[in-house]
Structure formats: C-alpha cells, structure tokens
Image 1 (spheres, one colour):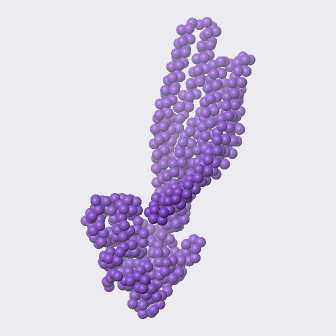
Image 2 (tube, helix red, strand yellow):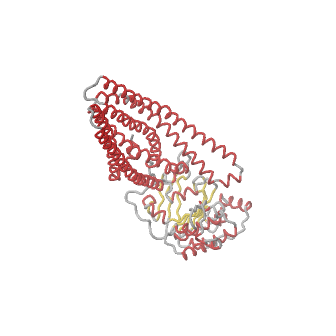
Image 3 (cartoon, helix red, strand yellow):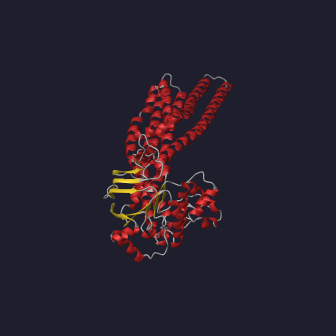
Length: 594
C-alpha cells in the first residue's frame, strides 16, 4: 500500500479539484438514494388509494408527481456527473504531467552508470505506459472507490433504518467478497509486475530494431529479429493471459455471490409481505429491490478496482524504482564555481573500476598543463575514455582526486563543470531537429552568423549550404540523414560555439576521410589555442604534434613525452607507431606545431 499512498500524494497537491470531484460524487450518491424513496412513496400511495377507492385522478396526480421527481433526480445526477468528469479529466492530466515531469527530471539527474545497466525501451515504457497505468489506478480508483463507499454507506443507513432484517440480507455476502478480494489482490499484484516487465522488455527490443535497422538489413537479420520479437511478444501474451485468467475466475465468482444476495432480498421481502410485517409495505419491498441493486453495483466496482489497483501497484513499483534510485553523482552541500583562468588538470593517485569488473584505472598521476595538448593512446580497454569520463564526472573516482586549478571536480557545481568542458565523443549524438537547433545546444543565443562561422570553422558549411533548407534542415533521429563524418563535424562546430576552457576529443576525426581529417585538424589547431586539451586517439598520426603523449595500459602509465622523445626511447609507443605505420600509411599532414 506504500506505493499507492505515495502516488496519492500527487492527488492532494490539487486538493480543491480533488474534493470538488468528491463533492460532485456525493451529490450523485444522494440523488441516487432519493429515487427509490420516491418509488416507495408512489407505490404505497397508489396501492393505498386503490384500496380506499379514491378517485383515479388522485392516483394519476401522485404518479405524475413521482415520475417527474424521478426524472428530475436522474437529470440532475447526470449534470453533476458531467461536471465530475470534466473536473476529473483536468485533475487526471495535472497528475500525469507532474508524475512524468518528476520522472523525467530524475532521469536527467541519474548518473551514466544507471543507463549502463538498463535498456532504453524499458525506461521509456516506465515513463509512458507505467505512469499512465498508475495514474489511472490511483485517480480512477480513488474517485470510483470514494463514490462506491459513499453509496454503500448511504444505502446501508437507509436500509437498516427502514427494515434491519432486509438490510442484513443484503449485507450477508460482504465478508466472503472481502476475503476473496484480499486473496485476489495479492496474487494479481505479482502477475501484473511480470506483465509490466515483459512490456518493458518488448519495448526495448522494438527500440533496438528501430535504431539498428541498417545493421539488420546489412547482415540479413530480418528473420532472426522476427523470431526474437515473436518470442518476447509470446512471453508478454502468456503473462497477460495468466493475469486475465485469474480475473476470469474472480469476477464471475463475485458476481454470483452478489446475485445470491439479490435472491436473499427477494426471499426475505416476500416473507415479510406474506406475514404482513408491521411497517413493511409493497413500496418498501420495491425500494429494497432498487437499493439491493444499487448496493451491489458499487460492491462490484470495488471488486473491479482490485484488478486496476493490482496493475497500478505493479506499475507504481517500476516508477518509484527510478524515482528512488540513489544519485551517486550529485553536488556537494556547498558547491563552488568553476575555476577561472587557464585550466590545469591534475590526476592525483586516481583509481577507478566499474561494478563487478577489474580496475580500469590504477594509481594514475598525470598533469595537463594550462594551454597544452595532452594525448592518451594505447590499446582498446586501456582506460582512455574512462579517464575522460572521470573529468566530466560521468563517474566519480574510486580513490584519489581530479583537480582543476587545485579544486576537486567533486566540489565544483555539476552544471558549471559540464558547461565549461567541450566534449566531442567518438559517436556523435544529434537531436531530431534542425542543424541550427543542434548547434545552439552549444550556445543557446547564437546568431545565424555565429552558426555559419562555426560551421565554416569545422569545415561543415560546404555540405550544410547545399542542403534544401540549409541550417534549418531537419536531420532526423540521431542525425540519421547525415553521414558519420558530417555528424562529427557538426559536433565540432557545436563545441566551437561553446568556447570552453577545457576540451576533450574522443577520436574526433575517426569517422572522416584523410582529406577531411586534415581540414578538421587545421581548424582544431585554432581551437586548441589558449585552452587545455585532452585527446583520446587510436591513430597515432593524429596526435604526433601533441605537447605530451601518454601511453596507457590497463589504466597505468607506461611512458609519456613528445612524439619524438617516445620514438627515441623505442618503447611501447615506438612499437605502436611502427606497427600503425606499416598497417595504415600516413597520408595526411596533421596539425602543425602551435
């Protein structure tokens, strides 16, 4: 019930709307209770008048008055119902918006490590499907449950006040219904969690197929993916049927028990009429038949809410699993501003390892002097990209510290830290919008002239200018309408607009041809001026003019120095250089001395 109460707190943020909805429901309940009383009065008057041989005109007058009163009650009830639905819809959308915004804000705050172990489709399923499910269960459940309880309470008072024995006959099935409901809720909750998990798994597979559609076509994997999708769909079908089959047993059982209650009402009522029980009239008998039907309808609604609440509880657990996830990467209580001046980056005895893996970085001591270019090279898995991620605080160091001008990166405000670092990743990411909007993520107030200058700087203006709408051209999801080299140049232009004091390039020219690479390197030469730069490279020819080249192996520094000094030592770097020179001839001039 903890999950249900937590979601209910979102309802009470809008107490006015919530209680207004309940108020409309109370009015509807009172009008519903009023109708059988009118029926009782009309029947008793008509029968009494008939037995007394009073004129037919009086009978018709009472009948006409009664029918008008009943019609008016039903009309007013639906007016209140219309208002209730409108208010409920407004409240529903406010709660949905709040839940999704809180969930989205938490997703933006969560560290990279959270996404390392989760499928994007499953996360999206929680934000869209699970939030809607839990909102529907709590809001509709609260409203319908309140109306049902009010109806049961109101009718119970009227029934026991008029004829306790008839009221008892109506109440007899309730204990059994309560026991069945509790047993069903516990079993149903477990089954619906399996359904929600299977839904998330299917969504994840669908997202993978959409994002990897080129690979699927290139490797002729269509039949394989069809089979995988069928298996996951079948798993969802089986779990859904299991949950539904439980309902197929529970719902008819409860309906049968409530119908037995109606049988009891008819039996007791006929008995009381037969013995001519004092104060129990034919009108009261008909009123009780209406009340019994009205009483069991909300009882059925409450039983049906078990199904909705079970699904909502399962979805709520998945939603709050994200909302309750600890923030391992966050600001300290009193964060400091990003240091000013030329940036000096120092790694002090830094160690780091991913969960359940061997250490990736061990006792690293390294200094990036202000305004210099430092290159990290080494075999795949040497820890190069991890070191860059530690500077950006995508992960926190396990031991040691990383300092910017003497300030620990963990003490710097996260927003400021990342806004003052320009990063060009190996796999460029572009949003499904125009080129101009993608560039403005680097500097939101950039003018068109600023954008064109940045594109020219990154040697991207030539191809952008040829596009149908130029910089306003939509490039599709993840920039799918552009080549990898074109996307890479746009990310470089975006960093140029940001103009950061610290620059991190992770294989920034890995996806371009030699001629384009030479053009970009010439542009980067200007970008490197008066800023500290960290380059991660596999192709040594791209970093031979760096001020300091650091050779890594399993997170440890093997050697460091300039290109020529490392060649003269004839160590690990020299071996890598000669190996690449034999395998990949150097066909481009790289950035010259700065």
